[in-house]
Length: 153
Image (cartoon, rainbow, N blue to C red; front, side):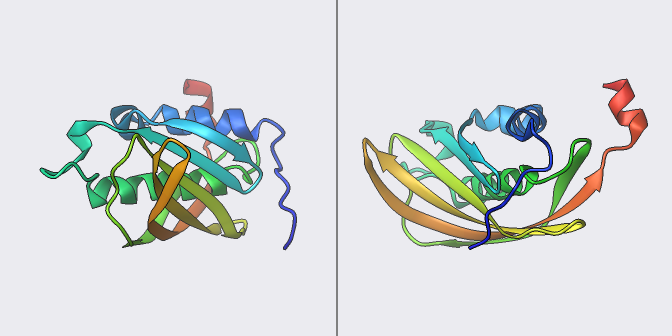
């Protein structure tokens, strides 16, 4: 497997800043775990308001976490001044998700200048025990941030 290299030496800080500034990410209340070039881990503590009546985390929440993890993994490889946006994602739910936390681990499958394809596995976790509950493919569109957006920030 190829070793992926980040073009931006501050990739971890850049990815966290972009993602955690998003209202959807703030609403979900997740946090980042491990971040490395081409990889990102997002941890969602259990919250009752993200579940259905039986206490299992909703599939839409699992999909959102997979999308954020895959997109964040792709974002680690972007040059400074670039961001990405989801074009498409497909999620397959494999098992009910219920635990102390949900962990989404994204990884880049194929990096490109304009598009990047990533995958994400989503686990429910209790203590050290993890159960794979969903897997996803995420396609991201990479783009340079317009200078006016950067100077107005």
